[in-house]
Amino acid sequence: IPFKAHHLSGGTLRFICLATVFLQPEENQPETILVDEPELGLHPYAINVLASLIKVASENKQVIVSTQSVELLDEFDAEDIIVVDRENGRSVFSRPDEKELSEWLEALKDTL
Image (tube, rainbow, N blue to C red; front, side, top):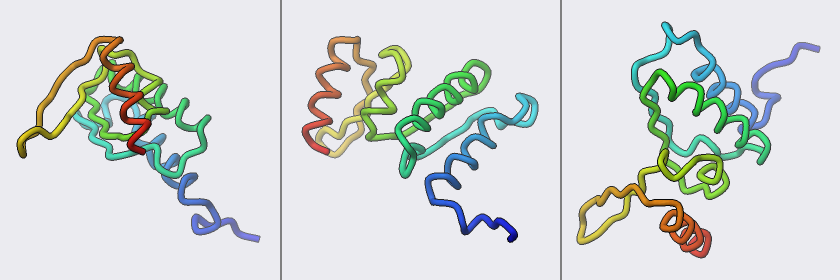
């Protein structure tokens, strides 16, 4: 019986696509990798693996990930995270320290 992509779950297909991007040889990767909510549909263990792939890729490339996933954010150090909030109709960027990030993540958990 042939195995086709539509037999796979959305999360599995998403992970395969993301792994393909992040595991490309460095010379084949774009200078900037931008991914929106890559954790959607992924098993919690796959989120851990994804975070590792992002970290490795970010050693040599600019990687920008937007997420609302506390689970994904927990995989990174505070210095790796820039928080974007909306204030008075404008985007405000901040780089919280460990304590501020912990408080921000707790507040985020309450809103999700």
